[in-house]
Every structure is written in C-alpha cells, then in structure tokens.
Image 1 (cartoon, rainbow, N blue to C red):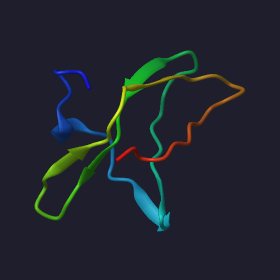
Image 2: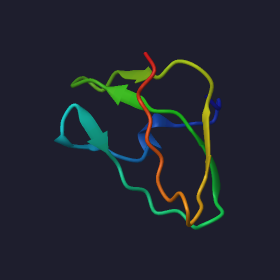
Image 3: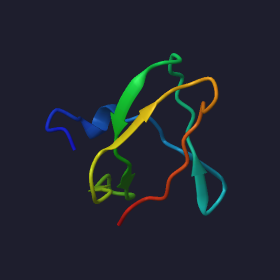
Image 4: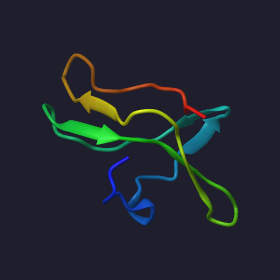
Length: 72
C-alpha cells in the first residue's frame, strides 16, 4: 500500500450482481500501468486492506481486464 493512498477516493463501490463475485469497471487508457490494492468497507465505514504486496497491471488490447481474489 502506498502511504499516499486515500480510501475516501477509492474506485467503487463494486457491483455484487453475481455474488459472491464482485465487479468494478474503471476506464483506463491502453498502455496505462497501474498499482492497486482492494479494500473492504463495513457498514460503519471501517476499512480492511487486502494483505500482501500491491498489485500491478498494464492495460493492453489483448488483456483489457483483470480478475483477482481478495487476499485476507
């Protein structure tokens, strides 16, 4: 996690139309390289960061989406 990340500015919330799978669409330009982590917020707004290293992804025409499981 980057010390400058602000959970109040997080993308989301994700859609749970296929619960327990969640979906979030974020528009990014092809070639964009991003670093991210998933968070969970409970009803009171408390934040839980996923464990482990930050995730990295580069958007490409051949691979325009990323799928992952939350790391407890």
